[in-house]
Length: 274
Length: 300
Image (cartoon, rainbow over all chains, first blue to last red; front, side):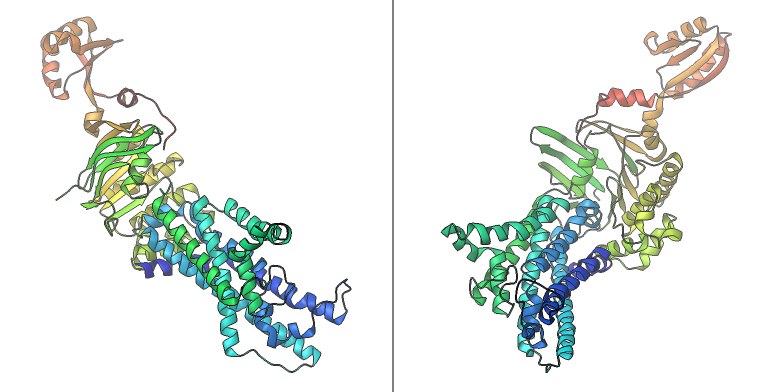
């Protein structure tokens, strides 16, 4: 029965244009901020106050760090929206009742959503890596640099780290959608946390208050930033900072993923479907 | 063999508000049961509790013999609750395919139910382009996916124009004629009268009356005879003074329809001219208002 739910959920999400738009935005933003703008800065075609990144960060050897650097912030924001849409639209369209009266259990449908969100996040990270690979290849050819790819192990670990972070943000979206039974408020609150509050805590509160600085080590954003930093993301990228080690960062991000999923399932099972 | 729908002391409270109060409801095999009540009487809350969408505060629900919480208890049940809910970016057909997956039924059934509700021609169009009537028919099609023995329909004609209402009622009656049990909620008396076999009236969360549609309709006899005063005296002598009321040039008799022949014979033998003698149709609206107290409130 859960397999039927997974298939049904896959059809729903694959056919949804909004998800492909999010994927496209993610690819364009990564391409823009990880390759196009740094390359323009490097070649001097665009004037700016800073020195910009070196050529090395754009070459295929730095593919992993360069492409998953956005997952703690803007790619994470897109993943959060994805998660909200997957779960929250069922409230907006009043489709929970339609689905559940077909005989599926709440937990079965929720498990299918979790699985599809995980697969969707994997597709997003894979698309970013492919985009980064093509862009890096282009930079190498244009600059006459040798093409050196990361090892398979580095690729797998990098993709795994990026997937873990992306799925964690998407699962936060799922949880918020179930908690607020909709779309607008969960997206709004999620993005405020992800794009504003986290930065305010890190840049304004943490330097002033020790306990805020300490709390950074257990919050999802800083741990996501630490994980991508350990995987080679360029320092200076928004949200990327090596506050804790890779092991702890992966464990904390994984724990948040599980907590969001379990809390969402618990809420959905417990509350009335109105 | 247990009845398709059985509730025992079913109750739902929201804080101090009692939305459904100690409801004992039984729907028998093969009947179309009208669940009648004003807006806010507790109809939708009851139906949602039957389907497990809302948790009862207390009481029991059995559907097709399965208690609430039993796995696959909705296997033989189809439902349309408070209007259709579908994915707007998918076609009608793809919406049903998704739901067929959830229900664990084959894709072939999708074409069958589209034919049943006469929606096959527009099945490839996006749901968002459908009229309200088409959306309701798609909702019925979704309810039919599992070829259910029990259909639970919550105000399936709500918001439709008269033609759309007639379409939906014809489909529902057709499904019932195939031997399915139908539990249909409505606040439209005429609808219940047209489709249903038996009616339960709910008011403020309580079942206040349960009767057949024939009983609901039957309301004595109407007699038009000349002279009216003599006719009133003769009939009153026969059935009792308190059962006769003069309404203009019409006698309204609160008696069983089976007494018509006796009354006719009495009047004719008395030399009175009987111009009309027929069963009186009940004032359904009045009956409904009397039984339900006529009030509506905020709960669904």
